[in-house]
Length: 416
Ligand code: NDP
Ligand code: HSE
Image (tube, rainbow, N blue to C red; front, side, top):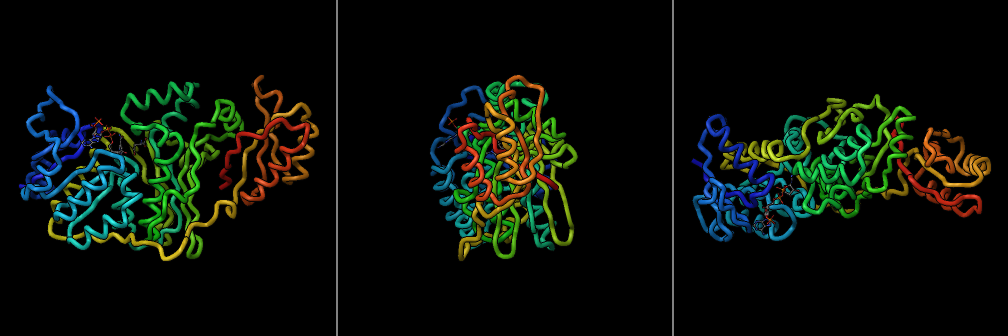
């Protein structure tokens, strides 16, 4: 029998308990031992829960109990999750988590402690909810040099964009739905401003490139500026708008970013809708491989957490090696040096003058129009491939002309 403690009895924590209870027989068979939940730590009381006899508010009950060999941290946030995790690892207890903020920030240190203690710190649920991605990268694709990762890494924003595109819902209504379904972070700004996807691409990049990529240094844009008109323009281009995390190895450097992208409906990520996530990985032996599934929600996330628990029970006496050290030098390429095409809208009273100016400053652009009265006083276009810093200089130049009112809605366009 292996005894575990669950820290946090919210969406994911209650899902973990439910999955262990519901599938207890098959889980024990696969793990080779029965898994018994000895404690649940939460600051709240759950007087009506059938699990209330397991509840504690004191972390020391868990850390001082030698019978507990696995701690499941599903509280979220940095503190006290970091302190509890570190203390648990130092006490020789394996830790499983879904907390990407903690993994992205302190992953290298916590994995280092786990290695030293010959135990495990596993975090399959921290990226892509229920989708297996961390273990495939570390095991099934271990023979490859991973050169590129691109994906829809946030369920909440993908749900919001899908509702805006398919149902014409407003941003606020779609966000409220996602919160009610348990997809959103406690502070939904983490989702809609792109920080959650940024932490996930930082985790994937750190694992695949073997050294810590600081999520604070990754260029990150969310979806708060995306309007229904932008969605209509994308439709006119036979495309959709998706929030994508991207990471690519170029020599010994890395490009990493999170931003909305306009992608063709033909692209494999275009059809990924609602709470689903998908991650495209390029390996030098396998070529392209795509992972797809539910990226958030109680039971899908619990599925990944419980799989980590089973993995630990099967390997209780050894550390599964994960390479994530600190980087010797800065590996991230400055966003200004990276290249893309861009969709841009310019408000103006003089369309012919603006079109002439744009062609002069940016080269041959593809002008697009839609039948929407709200867009009558604007010119919209897609630029040729440009370095970001060149685009910024050009847009500043365009903005300085008296016949230009504002330049806005600058969205990257994926050409391949
Ligand atoms: P919830 O807010 O639903 O659950 C967290 C629980 O932990 C709450 O009951 C909370 O209580 C409790 N808690 C918070 N601080 C403490 C503390 N100091 N001591 C004891 N209990 C505490 O969050 P989720 O379950 O949605 O998310 C948990 C983690 O999993 C987060 O890191 C999240 O990013 C991640 N995750 C979430 C997914 C999802 O779909 N929801 C998917 C993948 C990962 P209270 O509410 O009173 O603060
Ligand atoms: N808020 C996150 C999302 C939860 O919507 O993707 C899963 O990590």
